[in-house]
Image (tube, rainbow, N blue to C red; front, side):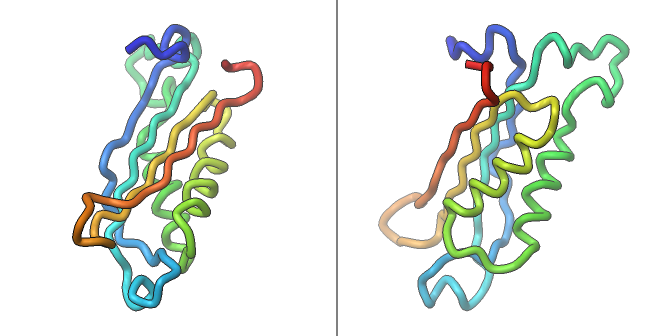
Length: 129
């Protein structure tokens, strides 16, 4: 990839995290949890995440990313995917090791005539780009 962030940053990613979520504004979406697929890319400083000793505390842990998602989804009904993306993004960007992130959510079971409906957001800390 030629993404400028990759020249000085490591990209960590989580693809297709499948979580049941109470999300949506339509009546049929408020009856029960629905399937939500989440993709997350984190950009962390390449210099600050060298695993010199092959230890987890030297890098940003994937468990942190999953925990952020599961904690937010467990807080109760969410009306909009935009709200969920923004909340997840805020928690990810609060981590000192995360320099930029991209969060994508999609609901694959809303409409029978499309693969999914979703939202994506990208944010970088000041001075990163």
